[in-house]
Each structure stands twice: as structure tokens, then as C-alpha cells.
Image (cartoon, rainbow, N blue to C red; front, side, top):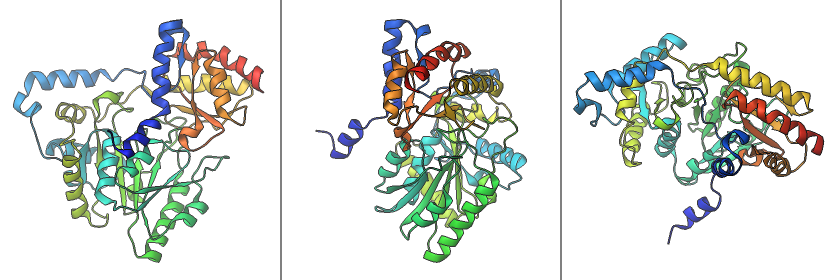
Length: 394
């Protein structure tokens, strides 16, 4: 018999994944070109050619014992040093390999840092709407996720409510910018105010509150938007990064944590992250992928592809009467449902073979997420269906 905890997790398994699986079944019935699947944030842009070339070169020229063998739980020293130097050049920081822990994607990184800092009953805050797996990640270590209500006008963080919800049990705040599911980029002013609140509350309660910045979409920005690098604003910041989106490598599961020297209990925290990497069963991040991304630190996926999708879909939906804050980053639109219960909207779309994810999956009912990291033809094919739904429900 499976555990009671897993029973609940199975029963509430990811709506996003369920929609993705349903899309595959619909493709068998209607044909793949007649199903418009916007459910999963699975990049449709191929990885830069340099990535494949790097992997081939590594396999052809590097000792197989090194390529396929164990290394430090934190990852190859030369890989971590290369990443640290790249960050220093881009963000005027002063990291070394000691500040970098290679991880099994951003999800693995978040689990490593939460395992490292949480005691049972500790509270972790996050802003709605948020990636639903945060709740499970916190629950993995018997913490409690506290949700801050969304700011429905701008989807910038609701800072007044954040301040009210911080308690002596608060151990961390998870933020995600550019944001999944809204595509909103948190402004520098927002980050400065947020950091001031955390500093104030640390002093008030005599505790340490870690700011965990989940950044898989950092490079996917439009219209000149800039994403502040949070270690420069708040000393107790830990950054979780993934190459899943920036290099279109979601299935390779490769990323890293940045733990700055200024963070409280730096040495103990790094040691805990190393041990957590091992005992969570990762042992270390994939060896070949570590070596490959170190050769591709100046590469990036084709953001113009996503931008064309963004503009076409956003302008089309606005023309049909839909409401949406125009995203500055990532590859999602978070669209207000024309019906109070967004599941009615989801079902109306499904009748047109259009798959979107209800906002309740992100703790923000009344909206749907549309992942536009798809073929351009999928956008064009779906627009008439969205127009039909608008005429039916508005």
C-alpha cells in the first residue's frame, strides 16, 4: 500500500501533465496538426547547434572515465568555475566555483536548497500565481507553503500582503521572474522594496529568511526588459537556474544553484546542499551535460521565435476581446477567462481541440495559462477556435 502522503499527491497530480497526456490522445483521434496543445512549457525551438557539437567533441576527445564517472557532489570544478566567471562578467558579481552547486535542473536545485534549510513546520512564502510544484517541493520536507494573493492588475508581487504574512516561522520566500504563468518580469523597484521587507522582518524576528530565486526563464525576455540579479539586492539570496529554456534542454535536467558568500551560514549551507544532492538520490548532476553547458555559456536559444508567437497570439486574443497583461518574458500568456469558472472556458477550448491550463493550477482561478512555446502554425491554427470561444462565452 502506498503512503498516505503519496495517495494525496497521486490524486492531485499535475493538471498540466494531465492535459499534455490528453493532447497526445486527441492527436491520435484528430491528427496532430488538428490539435493545438498549449499545455506544457516544452520548448519548440531546437537547442543551439553548439550544444550538439559540444557533446560530440566531449565524447570524441575526453576520457570516458571522466565523461561518465562520478565527481564532487557539487559538480566538476572547472564547470563551476566557468559558470562563476560567466555570471561575474554578466552581472558584476564576484563568485567562484565555491558558490556554484550543479543540479538536476531547477526543480532539483529547489529541492536541494529546501532540503538544506527546512525544519518541519517551517513556512515558505510565494506569490500567486505560481508554479504548482512549489507546494509539493515544500511539502517534501514537511514545510508549509504560504500563498500571497495575486495582484490582478499588474501581477507584480503583492508586497503589503507579503509583509503581513511573514512570521517567526518564515524560512524562505520563493520568487520566479520572468514568471510562470504570467510572463511578468519583477521590476528593480519591486525587488528593492521586497528586499527591504525581508531585511526588516529578519531584524524583527531575529531569524534568517532566504530569498530563493527560481530563474529558468531569465534569458527569455522581450522589448528590452531587464531581470535584476537578486544576489546584488539581498544577501540571503539563493539562485536556482536551469538550462531547460535558455538552451532548450528540458529533458537533459541540468542547472545550478548560486549560494553567495554573503548568505547566512554560507559554509554550512554549501555543505548541506552537497549532502542534500547526494541523499536525495541525485548524487550529482548529469556529467556529460555539465561539461557540455560549460562550453555553451555564451549561447542562447532563438528568442525572436518566441517573440513572434507572443505578438501574434497576444494581438489576436486582444482583438477577440480577451484580457491579458502582455508578458515581458518567459513563453506564457495568462489570460482572463470570459467565464467566472475558468474550467468552463477550458472545456469550450477543448471542444475546438485547444488545450490550455486552468489558472486554479497556479492558485489563481479565473484565468488560464497558454504556453506559446509551440510551432507558429499551432498559433495560427488555434486563433479561429479562440475566436469561436469568444463569441460563445463573451
